[in-house]
Length: 198
Ligand code: GTP
Ligand code: MG
Image (cartoon, rainbow, N blue to C red):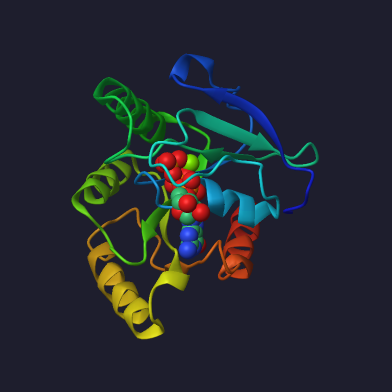
């Protein structure tokens, strides 16, 4: 499923230039700098498919990736929350993120990325509510697990699962990952493979 055949299909800053909604989509959402682009690269095993950087606000468009042999889009998104970018840009991204997440008919699942060091923050809660309201299936993925101790990872997993219990559209399992160390990707790939079968 995840081979080097994945390529960039299209990037758009608005909803007027989305690719046709003719196949399932899996989107990766989360705060700026949480590790969305890095996670997509680690998932497909390519270092530079999606552009990652240290500067929050790196991804500025909805970026669609595809594998010519698969009926599936992977979607990298701009982040929400703080970014090193002009206020108007951040506001525009927020609008596009919300409209896309709430309105995209073909969204099979949203992986909501949360920094394992920080857990859920208020901007994440807003997105959880939005996804619940739109009845879009989503699942939390903790990122940067290499940056904390295993005992702290356990704690943040527990705390996050407890918070998710109040959210009807949340899938009741969390995947902990490190794109840096390649941790959690068998589980993530397995989850996606299952989604595509169902
Ligand atoms: P925006 O596009 O700005 O919203 O950010 P993003 O969510 O796409 O994050 P990106 O993948 O660009 O990563 C942000 C920074 O975190 C980069 O410096 C990455 O190298 C780093 N990073 C991402 N994943 C990991 C990880 O698993 N472990 C560690 N230690 N660093 C990571
Ligand atoms: Mg990015």
